[in-house]
Image (cartoon, rainbow, N blue to C red):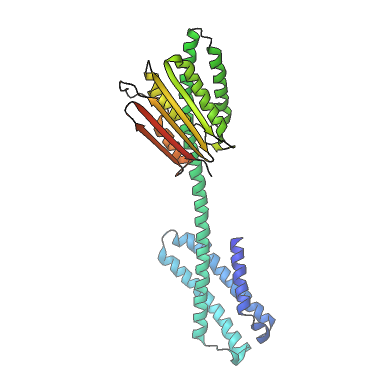
Length: 333
């Protein structure tokens, strides 16, 4: 369609430029003049684009390419200049100059101009198509990486919850049925909702709240765990499993390593499309050893960079007696 539009514009230009031939040399000569130029230009243009360009230029055979283009342009010049010399020198007669130099120079530079435009058009279309393909590949690659990173969340969290449930069943605790119910709700979210690239923010918050409820059941009166949510959600959407890692990380490296006076306070604020999550947890007295497992903050940073580039801010601070994590995400498209 773009090529067709280009040649329609070129034909329109020639019709406008040569319109005087209708009454100076009659309609047949006008039609032959315009049609001949356009057909010859189309011939050498697509000979260049579909044969010379891929066979010589793209393979870096520059001498062969420019020789081939030069020969095709020379052939066009000979045919077009012979017709122009006949038309202006004999049909129209003395009203126009039929000098060979003027005729050849006009045809030469106009031909190079139109071929240059066609080449630029071709290269622009090819570049756009390559960018579109690269963008598609990039999006697919990013989505694959996001899916991989997200898959690391579910097994780790499920392992922790099942361990908690196992401990409660050993104690024959009345809390076990409640844990099973909450776990089933979370499994439904993990299996059916999180496969989407975006989920409702309300569901993500509900998932996080259920996780904290399970951890509160686990630690009981030995810890102070809370999550405060404020603001209007208004149907906002977010990529799944972006809020959990900060709370899970604080739980794993803070609360779970303290026997008494452990605490974790979360504060989630929603202001239109901007969400802010602040998580602060008590700090163990003894430094922990490096362990394998868990999704880690590195994976969270990767996901944020892939999903919300230049639209997020994540900071982790050591305040001496506590760790503070702040996450801000702009959810606007």
